[in-house]
Each structure stands twice: as structure tokens, then as C-alpha cells.
Image (cartoon, rainbow, N blue to C red; front, side, top):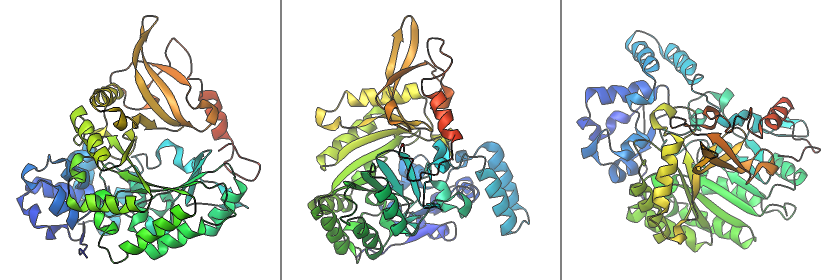
Length: 445
């Protein structure tokens, strides 16, 4: 068993490697870490980070706060507050004020919360017809926090902007009322932070014969990248694998939605062993990551990552565009550049790697893929389509936006061909003017 050691703002000075950092780098950890969540562990520190390449090492940037992750005015305000005689509550108040300016619920997440029998399911989101997201309350933390994470509000102690739920029976009741749901995605946080005994309780409840509509259980996790011992040497790792086998034997598909942001995360013997053990249960492993400035913004990195994933029998699934929240200003990449990275990487890999879809924005109306850049009737345009939509009828419908080399998100784009609106805008407005009760008569989500 590998001993787990977690590092947060409280004890990060215990990391011996940090002694090589400049005073400015250490100050940035303190200042930014009081606004955006910071947590890492000994596996990341000892196996993934190249401490001779600080602060530019991609895994360091992925897990440690850097000054540029806050806007200059926010950094200055927090630095001054920490350096004053302010107590912890005053520092926390300022941190919360800054957080609320960072779009803590991108893509209308707060509008995705359903209800059943008049009870709001604060740990469930139901945005797309076939898929419900479940946030088990014991899984709302991670082995280490990604600095780009769009779910950062889950980890900063602001309960009013946090999704979590313990009541699996309410989820079951909701799924029975909504037979259109075929997939449940366990998310967080990271469900694999939970002990197997707790996770198994949730999973076994969903194997009930009454939930005959449920065909796939997905588990979103970064554990393979940040703590692969969860599947190999943790004291309940064997029990976890047996639980996975039980899900498979029930006739459901079990998909581990693994987050890998850089090839380095796929390079250790520990992660290779963890992957082999998971696959031995019959579970699939699909991979996804946003494209991130300072981390993986080159076609060479993506093609290397996809090839390695396929070599390990993983299924490349998504290249996302970094969401419009938190440190997007630091990690964000123009859509035109993201498409070029995707296209150039896609061209250099074999067909077996081309299961990946992207670049895709998880926006308010749905998942929008940038299919490419073209010229139509003399106008340079982005060609876009919905991979998922709040209205299923939007899915796979191509649409066009004026080319904008600086745009990094859907709401920065304008319709092409002098159209006043994109085709979905009126209906989206109607959807958001309705109450999201999701009662028995509302099956459009």
C-alpha cells in the first residue's frame, strides 16, 4: 500500500521541492490559493512534476497556483489583504467577493437542477435528455485540484454554490419518473475519492431491476492521473474492482471517464497497472481533457497523448475548450487556434485514435463543436454543430458564425450571413423563462 500524503495551503511548505521556488512563486501559491482551491499530493509531486522546469512545467502549472491565474487587480487586492492585519474572516470575505466575479456556475448549471415530488435535487443536474449527472456528497473533493477546473466552487467552502446530494433514493425516484434517462454520470469533485464501501452503496442502488431504463453508469475521475493507487494498492482497491465487475455483470455498461491533460500523466508504471486492472473488470475507459494554454496547446502533445491512450487500450473521447470560469483568461485559447491544434493532431494519428471529438464548448445551450473554418459566399465563417443540446432537436444541426480570430467562447461569436440570431436563441430564451421543475409532465430535458 502506498501512503497518501495531501498538501493544501495549510501544509504546502512541507514539500521539500518548493525550496527551489522563488519568493514570488511561493507568494503566488499563498495569494491565489486563498481564492482558487489548491490541493495536491505526494504522487503528483514526486512522480509527475519536473522540478527543474519550474514554474513552466505543465503538471506544476496544472496543480499549483501561479500569479497569472488571477487578474492583476484581484491578485493585488488579495495580496494586500493577506499582508495587512486582517483576520481570516476578512480574507475569506474578500475571496468570496472575487470568486463571485469569476462566473462560478458557467453554462447555466444552476438551471439544470431538477426536482421530484416538490423536492429539489441539489445533487443532480439534468441538462441533456438521456443523461443525468449525480454529485454524491462524499465525492465532492479530489486527490488533487486542477487549476483550470470549472467545478472549483465545489471546493472553496461556499455551500450556496455547491452541488452535492446523499439521497440516492430520491435519484432513483427521479429516474423512474424519467424513463428517457439512460445514463447516469457520477461526478464531483471526484467520486473515486470515496471509500469503496460508500461508492458501492450508490452503485448497487442503481442496479435495481426497476431502473430498467438505466443502461450506462459513468464515473468521471482524475484518480488515474493523480492517484492510480486507488485501483491497485489502496486497502479497498480489490473491493472496488469487484464492485465494477458487479456493475458489468448486471448488464450495464460501466465507463470510467478519465481526465488526462498531458502525456506525462500516462507515463508511470502505476497508471499502467491501474488501467490494466480496471479493464480486467470489463469496464471501458474513455479519456477527455480541455485544450489549455501552458499545458497542452500543441498538436504534438495531443497526438502523443492520443497514441499513448490507444496503446494502453483507452478510448480518446473529447477535446474540450476551457470553460468561461475561474482562470479562463490564463488557460483560454481562441477557437480558431484550438481547431487548428485539433486538426493538425487528428491528421497525424491513425483511425483508431479518431474516436475523439472536438474542440467542443460546454455552453449554456449545449455542447458545441467547432467543425472547422470555411468560406461561404465570400464570407469567412466558423462551421459549428451541437453534439448535445438543451433541445435534442438541435443536435447534429450545422450552423455558422462569423470568423473571429480572437473569440474563445460561443457568446463572443456572431451569426454569419447577417442573421440577427443563431437558430436556437429564441427557443433557449423560452426555456430559461420557464421554471425548471422537471416534474412528471416535463420530459424535454
